[in-house]
Image (cartoon, rainbow over all chains, first blue to last red; front, side, top):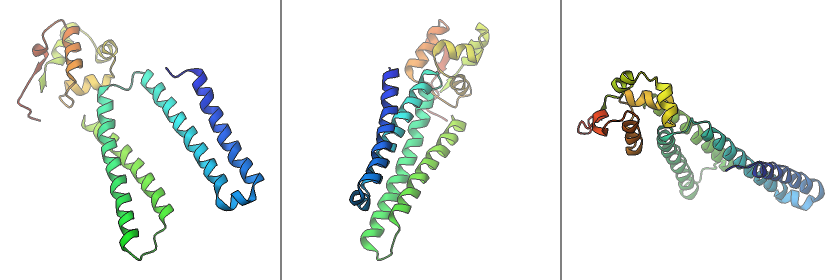
Amino acid sequence: MWSREKRLLAVALLVAGVALGVGLEALADPLEEQGLAWVVLLVGMLVSGGAVAHWASRRFEESGEIDERFREIERRASRWSHGTLTVGVGTLGLVLLVSWIEVPVAAVLWALLAGSVAVHELSVEYYSRQM
Amino acid sequence: MDNELKVWRARRDVTQGELADELDVSRQTINAIERGRYDPSLELAFELADFFDCAIEDVFHYDGGEE
């Protein structure tokens, strides 16, 4: 059961992540050069984002909207988005390995991430209409 | 898989929403089953038969896997 204590812990993690990132950036210039402050900030955001997503999904489940049909739709959509991401990252890796083309890796990875989310949502919509 | 869920629901004068609440699934799921767009799990099929107090084959008929 998702308790109030755990929700508070998730919020505390968010605050701690942001505070640590901002603090490190302000205090330690050498770390800033290495981008460590940004890494900590990003990790903090990712952890808190995951916690919030988990909390939201639990609330959604408790509302009764999630049943076996919904899980089947989610499973099929996840297969498509996972496939998209795998093929995309694999192609990027191949291009980086065998090609001399300069690829903006970070931008492509962000685009792949956004693309896989879009594929997932479109798949959910498609299968919701199919089933 | 064919089913006579709509017939059984009409016999018992139960709405899709009421049936969904009773079985802890969404109304959309009941609608999808009735329209033959979604085949329920064995567990849900048994729960439906149990709700209507009949055998599972009275509600669901195997059609050889045809879509």
